[in-house]
Amino acid sequence: MAKEYDLVILGGGTGGYVAAIRAAQLGLKAAIVEKDKLGGTCLHKGCIPSKALLKSAEVYRTAKEADQFGIMTEHPTINFSKVIERKNQIVSKLYTGVQYFIKKGKIDVYSGTGRILGPSIFSPLPGAISVEYEESPENDILQPKNVIIATGSRPKHLPGLPNDKEIMTSDEALALDKLPQSIVIVGGGVIGIEWASMFIDFGVDVTVLETADQIVPNMDKEIALELRKSLENKGMKIDTNTTVLTDTYVNDGKTVRISAESGDQQTEYSAEAILISVGREGNIDNIGLQNTGITTKNQLIEVNSYYQTNDKHIYAIGDCIGGLQLAHVAAMEGIRAVEHIAGEKLEEFDLRSIPSCIYSHPECASIGMTEKQALNENYQIKIGKFPFQANGKALIQGNADGFVKIIADKHTDDILGVHIIGENATELISEASLATLLDATPWEISTAIHPHPSLSETIGEAALAVDGNALHI
Image (tube, rainbow, N blue to C red):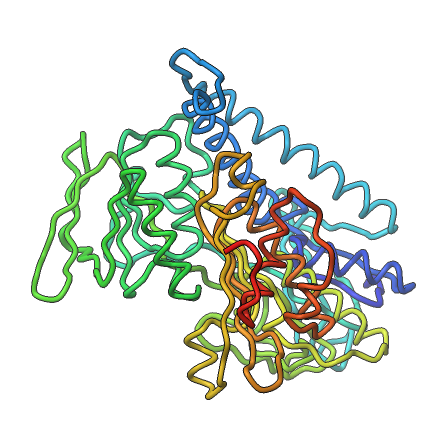
């Protein structure tokens, strides 16, 4: 007999398990089907473990620079096995927390592969879920009133490259048990740059190849230029407008070599390993989409503004629908999908109110439009910038590179975008996120009292600078 639920969620990653918790809060009987571990990519193969490694790299870099604080250290070294151990402990602790919250919400979890069935004796509509198990020929049939597909994504590979252990994606990089001496990173987007920053701070020789004309192509151009300058000052080699030629790959057992072209020029690059970071694609294979009316495009599920597919009782959220493939976006989409299922009224949501972060060194964060986007949409703009060099707390912390940039509408004074590069940028952006939600003006931000000394003063000063009234530049 089929087990009945108000909601069954395929995938227990950030979007999936948050959706399940919200469903439980709203009194819906919910279940998750997850073939691996709750927490998904973010907890086990993405956000959390990579940031744990970045923190260790930061501490190592700080130890090497400790003399600027008057602290003398003798040749700090890396114990990479302890770095990995710390990373694993953090992941384990958070994983235990996720399991606790699922249990608290009385949410059933099926540890298998879920596939959507077509119309059958269980339902005249597609949407029944067959749960299949690796070690058992038996399967469970779940009969939900609604389904949320939250199956996430996986790293893309470059066609034409062999399946060598020296060629890795972020998944394999997180499983490294020792650091390479040198690495070529193909792709200068957010993930590629975070790995590049981590490796360079660990002392690895790093080269980044990016096809666009700037690294982190979706960021404001001034932020991207400042980030590139900072990384190159550490010794990183970065080539933009460069396309990798996969058929030139050579592995001689000691190093790997690959060529890339930029215009008419072809250059060979060699290293101990290659990291491919060219985006992600949705995990939508073998989940029964052919049994539904759901449409896909470019390996992504198409949905409406409420995250409904063509079969309105089947929703999809997170990386498998594309858009901003961020954990906090998947969580937000999961909450909104569940609230729509529960019949709650949803306010209009602007994707530009979602902050984006890069956890490199220096950190970068942004919300809203870049300067180029604002001009392309025919806004007349005014810009305020404030450097961390003029901020007391940044100087105290020994890291005063970078700036805050606020873009506002010249006529309405509306904030169009906020962009930060520098110390704790990924924390500072939350003030801009709240300001965006409340439709604040630069004047309102500048009028809010920021404690002294604090990095947050840079936000207030940049807001003053929009109208030429900054106090400390």
